[in-house]
Length: 460
Image (cartoon, rainbow, N blue to C red; front, side, top):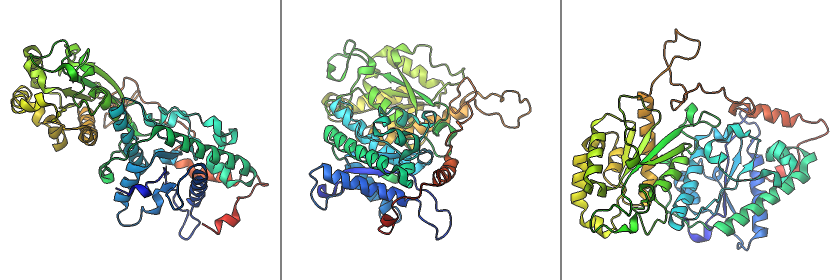
């Protein structure tokens, strides 16, 4: 991890623009100018000492040695994450990885404090229609209108390229810097252990998957919790880990202040899913292997449920039906003295109850079923379990012939997650491959406007 003295104040996340040809101008020089301007404003608005890192931009180290480690360290220690929205940004797997790594810090912080910690301050590099925003970006509560009307219609790229919009650019960048400082001083995210960036999933969904792309059809996943409530626990079991229903079970108490179901929901939403949740007690008749699945699912199990014979029999019956699109996660807190004292017995009984689920799937799924020891491990393993469940769902979901085509050679699912209606065509404005056309529009917008800041270009 980076020394505390060099923790960056903010992390600027953006999608690289390819050069137009060998030896041509670097289109990312405009992002570098924005980065310098933001750093200057942040230094002026704070008491950061001279030489401190006001900001971090990943381009500085992406091509050098150890870039993955340094990138992970910056994401684990910066105060604010600043994504530059553009169609190209949401098509970038690398940008999605950066978003996921930082957002997961906020999830961990929220679990520990039971308070929402929103430290993402987005900026419009190129305007993006709301219909093209993936779930994690769409859920941000952020008003871009406070940065100026021209900023909303043209984005920072349009303002920085045209001399006639110099005043609007300066206002937008200053307001953005003020927002960064205000969020940094309000939220106060603690540094965490850096994630292995190479294994981090994208917050925008799987690369190359239409279901994970911005503006694509919604992906859904269901979370079921098999646990007791404080009113029906085994004799002698402490109620401090339980609430009024299974959804209130908090196995990592007191480190976590939030029930496991809601922490898992946050992690899964950070993978660009919509989620639904229920208690295993309320799911009688739901698990029917004779019917095609409608979504992938995760079953979160408290080992103590095997002490309840009725629940144990229902779990055993569930295990006998083939449902590979449902993966099991078993949280386990070694600092829970009662659980640790009965660990061997409860683990053995659960393996006897769920022999198929405890051994099926890839290594991550088996590890999740055999016990997830803490919140940090949950955050690392749950995305892999979700991905495996989604892949199994796609293999087993019912397929339909596309409307009006009875001679197709390869039937396909209606929607990426078996939705009941065909997916809508992708929105027309600003598709990922139209960025260059937008640049051409800006460059030729007005014959009286010219690129601004030529003197500054010599300093780049």
